[in-house]
Amino acid sequence: MTSAIVLALSIVVSTTKSHAEEATQSSSVAITSAALYGTTLGFGAWTGALRLLNPEPRYGFKKGVLFDDSVRSLLRLNDEQARETVSQISDILQATLVTQPFVQAGYLYLTDEITATQAWSRALISLHSFALSTAIIFSTKTFVGRVRPKTKDCTPGIDDVRCASAPLRMSFISGHTTAAFTGAGLMCALPDEGRAETVYEKLGCPVALGLATTTGLFRILSDNHYATDVLAGAVAGTLSGWLIPRLIYAAQADRQKTESVLFESGSRFPGSAELTAVLTYQDESVQGKWMPGARMRISQYLFGPGPKSLGGLLGLDARLERVSHDNQRQRAALRAGLSYNAWELYGLTRWYGQQRGLFEEIRFGSGLGSMFGHQVSLSLRFKYGLDFILTSERDVIGGFDFFTDFGSWLHGYIRLEKEFVAGPSVQSATFGIGSHVDWGRW
Image 1 (cartoon, rainbow, N blue to C red):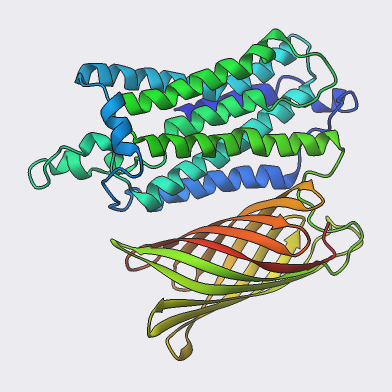
Image 2: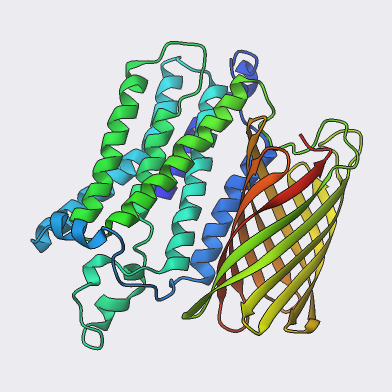
């Protein structure tokens, strides 16, 4: 329901006035890039695919960690009706904080504080932040499958519905807290629009932070979440709602390109090579295991006179993982296709191998990917993107990547991947650190 409210409000803000009338009046350039639209839709597509193809999360762990049990004993309400009331109040607080960034943008436009272009920029960035936080919410809920604390006292075999139903295996992370802090972050991450802040904006940030904190507290009081669920949600919401918008607004103020033009203007042959040491947690059905390994990726592009020209793409991905003491797995993929700005559309050939049988199986497929970047400083850059692959065996593979580049050659890497295959579904989380070489990139 809240996602429908978000979409409706963003449409209202976007149609309030013609952008062309006031494009030159805006003191900060509006974000209208294909990459920002694309990643927003991509996050939505990722979330939709998870919910459609994997409606039930895995059977995850059922215990508190760190200080969870102590906080639960201290804060959990004993009366069941009181817990239900507090839970309903947290629903209202979440909906309020989700809608406030859009309401604020509409109000400031209607009172002539900002232009239609600025209002649309705010609404689009807010929609992007909520799409990102929603993707984080359902990715973690699906991959982790943590059982809610309210089921702690139920008896397996006697009360199985209460113990193991799908909604009760979605404790980590707290979706209410993540959404609330995303909304609060957006209320605090205000752009520099060359004017004095209104009372609404000055009070909006502290009030929203207070309401978001209350939302998280109420999720613990109602026994819907452990404290670590709520803390993780607060971090994810702050990342989505405050950090990412601040990077975009800072780039606007500096009049930098924020549309993820990853290549220098006029560069005809941009590309990159990466070598990363990785540690992957793979969950097949109920079993899970950690696998060390290495990842190599080489991409070469062919552009026309400008960085936005339609061009060619040729890439090679290779990965080696140690499954057990005497077993290793190899995967490789050759990509060839078209690229435009931050988008890639390609066909691919994938090879698979186990132990000493190098490349025992070959599959063909097609893929669509996008990468969006934020240049924070000369030595720090964030990149995140999505990709979807359909193979000849009708396997669907979806992935979400997050890179942090430190300087000109070092990077950190996180990838969440879901494979919807003929047999049991496979999901994995990969963490890595490595080095890279870029040529022709900004």
